[in-house]
Length: 341
Image (cartoon, rainbow, N blue to C red; front, side, top):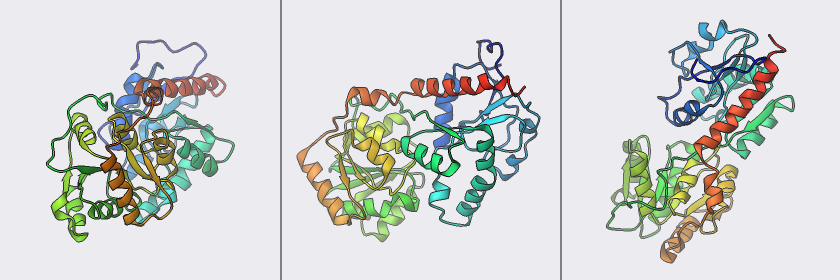
């Protein structure tokens, strides 16, 4: 058992799928939440890749009992007698399928994830936006639990800033179409600022910058730790979150915690929910033209405004609090498990 606490009498056994830690986005969530769970639990006896197609039919999952509860910090599910409580961080592949792989992922969600979640009656997510989308997708028979998301304590106003010869804006994220990195680059191109991009593939980012005529003013980096990323945020005049859709929007929280305001698209509900808590940040409506982003960015840069989000709001993104909320959901599902035994 992975916890020193004893399982309460009359409750079912909790099993945790702890195979996500080496992944990127979900991996960070798993690394922070699973060790902080306050519910006694066992670890799923499997080392297979949860992202692999063959993981759908997995012996460790198949042999679980009907009274067991299987919790996952990610989306992987499959045939099992156990009640499965996955974490669906977003519905990106449902709302924005962009290629054959994305459409196959959408089919996986529709044909496998949806019926299994409906059977369990519970699913965990990370934001009010994702909760609304999941509730509409799953129907009223499923309880969607928004347990929130966390942010590393490394992201604070206090600390070193990245040294730079010229003022710069910041872009953090991958280069998928819904994040609209071209908009961020084009906006900076119409200003006197540089752009620091923290991305998984710096070569792809530099190639995109070259196509948009901003090669000399773009620095693309990857593989940095939280301290280095926090220094980049602190040194920036603003962070550009140009996404048209996000399940959460972690760069918003990281940036605001470092004192750097955010320019964001108001159409992106999850990001707007986060950014609106800071009076120094700026939302741009609809399909704003790069010139509008450039004008807003220049205004923020010239004013020297810094983020002013309240301490109470920033404190909500604490990993221990997220783990506490997840633990309470799992206790509730466990208490129902005796009736299934």
